[in-house]
Image (cartoon, rainbow, N blue to C red; front, side, top):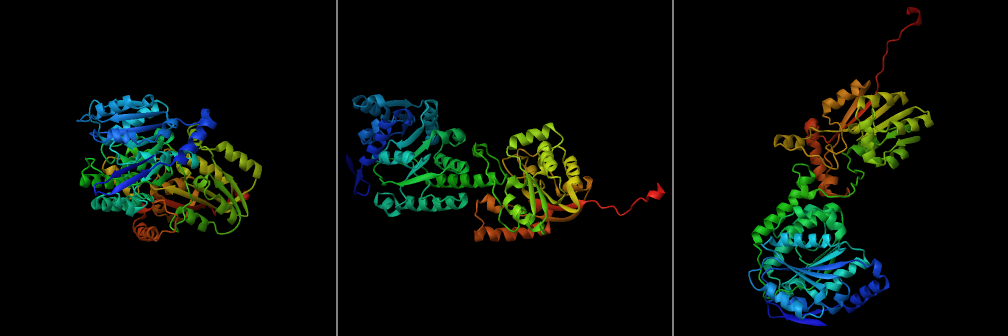
Length: 522
């Protein structure tokens, strides 16, 4: 089956069905019906009485053997879209596959999607494909939209008109929309660190696994819902599979205010970056996912400064430093390396609240077995998790050599944007950084040094790390722009470290007392 439509330029557009993809998916269903996923198609309609019957009639017949249900959500149309849809369903040989819902009021484009996805989750669909009822996105492409679920285990699929940019124009996309799509997508890719061919396609497939993990209910009800859900997928670190689709612009009505939409889209991506900076916090960007930490490569980072501080090979004890990210590098620099790495951050926090300090049992076990004195004890990004940090340092001091050195990394709560946040009444905890959920103490430079001295240590040196731009922009460390930004920021750190340093790298040793008591004088 193929469809031939004439676009608004008067050019015929042919839409072909991939029957091989249908046959392949049907074979998978027939060979293992019990494990075949439950797939639904969400059809969005609003004032599409002139297009809805044609759109539904173009759904390939083979699709009905693959999907479990096609649920049409009408957004309180002001024409006879609902009647036209009912009329088609009643005549369709696959009428049992359809369900029609009509919103009692207009929920907005985003609100209508929310209603559809909520229905999919409540009815335990595994995957939902979104199709517009006006026919702008080709129903003939449904097999291609579903195929990546099985071929690539895809959780998100976008049908992109811009993978072949020239085809978008030949399909009738107005030049101003083509330019706007290109410019906005470039901006969004730069800010988010993505590489999508377009952000603005309405042809999408989401797995329920993804929908359950993102708070899409908190997104806007307006048109930039599609951008916000991409940002949430980005925050979730889920891969977005793009497939090329044909572009078709016919006589359908466009209800989008282009200027307002462009502004909303730009604000959405900027809000996400500000959220990551903790300057603002927005609950729509709090995503349920495993927090991933990685080693920082910048020469201004605490990780690199720690490695520079460990100068001579010797015995080294690593106490849960930087979530174990420095293990390989420290092992390489040490003559003998021992570590106490807490595998479960939650249990680590619970231990710290119940005992005098974090992981005492683990630490005691390691030190009892080794019975050695250490040249270096590294405690990076760990002190903040201790309920009684002074006791931890005091107790650990007995295992360091007389000329041994502590290397401690402590986050700076007086960083400039935390100061601004407090000024405007914000103080939001997050998954990482100085305001990490598992930090039970917060430090400035003065309180950090005060802690070190009260713990019986003598401060040898204090270094200051930069703000981790490579983490914020998720750079691999090779970006020239990030390196330049890093270098410029280091100047501010030198001028005012208390306000601009992200972390303090403190080198210390046990306090030395020169006075000795002669036995004769006792």
